Image 1 (tube, one colour):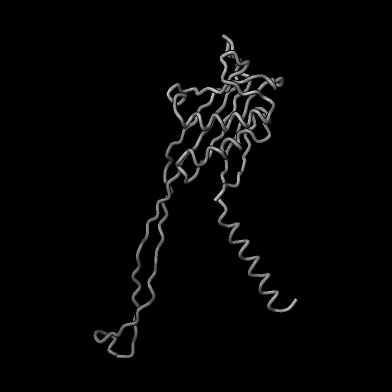
Image 2 (cartoon, one colour):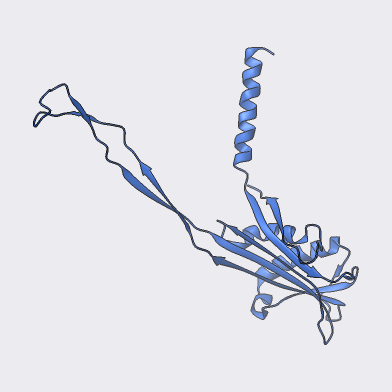
Length: 204
């Protein structure tokens, strides 16, 4: 390998590392509770636990994403009132305590003469050691998604309960909802009662 080829390979590797360093990740804590005989293949209707959310276009968008995940698991999403199961959905985003960092900036040293006092030598140089402080505040948001699968009868027996919680700088829930849904359904239904950390690579 000649020097030019080696340099090109090094630059390519550094560029790749830089790109990886800029990759945005969503980390979510996922926990689920379910019975051993969780039914599969039945018709299922998606509802919002909060009736106000259920009337919104936002909920309809999220319900469409969830329906695709349920369909891939073998369920049959329907709008019919007579569905065998109901998936109860809730979601929220709340502001957390912001992270504040203080950075102290030191200016380049400035040399200057002392012409009085004990320093009469015109060739003596002192230093300006003043500095400035920069305060940086980074907002943080807690994003949450939960889903219960219940029987569509008078008892509304809970067959599955799952939730995902994720903290991050993105406070717009629509931007992270696809990744929250992916995390919730990873290795569905999961080990009951065990919290796992799921990391999802986000699109730029």
